[in-house]
Length: 486
Image (cartoon, rainbow, N blue to C red):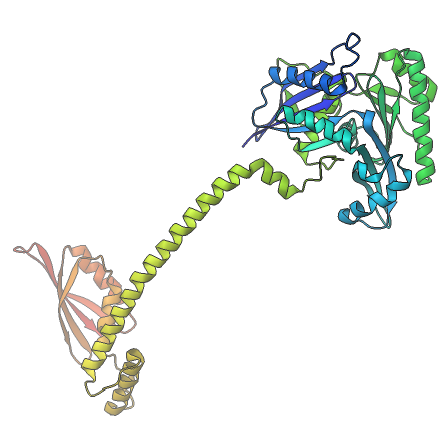
């Protein structure tokens, strides 16, 4: 069973898209494309929605996405973050109190924002990272997507999927700064002990690389100071990781490293993180524009919880959405098999009941024939056992009568020892005081020996001798006689 995952990363400068085939054989990047926004200097009236629509239109003409699941991330331009502590762990309760906790810190009414959160650490007080976006902004994005028949499972903030993948799957130290950069907006994440504690977004439309590096360094120092004031612990990141289309060159990284005294490097999610995702041989992964799109797909494939402005999806709901048609087909087949099995059971039960009734009638007939004086028959088997027991007691004339084998028991022993499929017919049964003579015919001499050996295993027989075994030419069958000592 396979599925397609199509991740769309809406940036300041353009839209990145990546298609992954997820199957039992593994995960394969089938297509990737970054479409920058058209130059709008000659069209100042062109709004953001139009630019995004144009880029999406080009992407969907290039990449075949029929049957794919859509996941989206949106630019830091309209997202802000808060780090909070709440006195309980239950997500439902946390979600209920978030509006009251956030309202004093918001520059607009709380009912005009969409909120989601991720748990940082659950202890006596649960630490959470909250993402906020104006509802009008997210609705505008969703309206654009609807024009292209795209209903996303996830709408995540830019860079968040990347920092989750780095914190959970990379071999880097567990304390680091991750910077997701666009042309104008930057998000800085502080990761401590493998957990994303703080995220802050900054606006910086500076084009000069040196000034931009200094500005980013100041922002990183602000985030470190904010972390230490909020959590009252020292934070010494071992490195700074950069990702995004807003990165200029190696000189830019070196400027930041010299300013902060911390190693700085650009991230290639495909190479630096073991996501167990391959890429088609004809493609070459473009880290600058595709890091977050790849991380989005990885988050969905691996079932990692992320901030999702489109509503929290339970595991049950997720798998129902993915495999709904398969479940329905399987359910219909299972229902048909169940009905067929029940019909078969009822059919067999009907015929078995008929056989039981026939046997009951035979038992009653035998009982009535044996004891004609009995007028009322309620339980013929039990009544016959009781009657036979009474007759035995009446006819008992010595203390050893119970040790003498009854003819019916001997016949039953012979019948049970000889298989039903064996071609043998007993024609004569003559009993003396301590022996009996059995006559019959069968189809081979081997059968005579086999019957003898089978009867010798019975405890009531002392010894068995083949008196005669001759071929009857007229019938071409073996006539035999067995002498049995009791």
